[in-house]
Image (cartoon, rainbow, N blue to C red):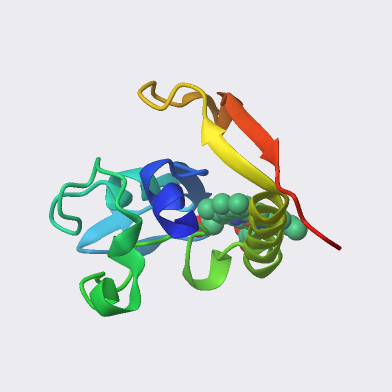
Length: 140
Ligand code: HEM
């Protein structure tokens, strides 16, 4: 579920790097100082890599269907030498938060048919998501 959420609404949709020296990539010459943008969002929504890419289908990432996910097509934390150094801690914090939330509360969307509201400013940020929380009766 976390992976599919990161695919459908990519936190860092575009990342820009700058060539530190003259280079040649894919037959093109790139001068030092050229900004090169990589759209992780476009990769996450590309029909060549994902069936029905706009649909939220967490089962895409289940073990039995994982082999359908092509290498280097799921990059919420970027990749190679500039991969996000906070990846492991971010994944652990998100998992821990959701485990505690669903353990302590029943969670339901107030407006399940409405699209999520978010703004973009280098990263996508949720601005409103109304949920009902009902405390679970846990004996501790
Ligand atoms: C959901 C949480 C996070 C997401 C989705 C995320 C995603 C990303 C992405 C896509 C990049 C760019 C990779 C590239 O250049 O191709 C990046 C870079 C970076 N992230 Fe994160 N990040 C997250 C959390 C964190 C946390 C918790 C930290 C620090 C504790 C962190 C520190 C950094 C740093 C320092 C860079 C720059 C790395 C470099 O350019 O060498 N991130 N992150």
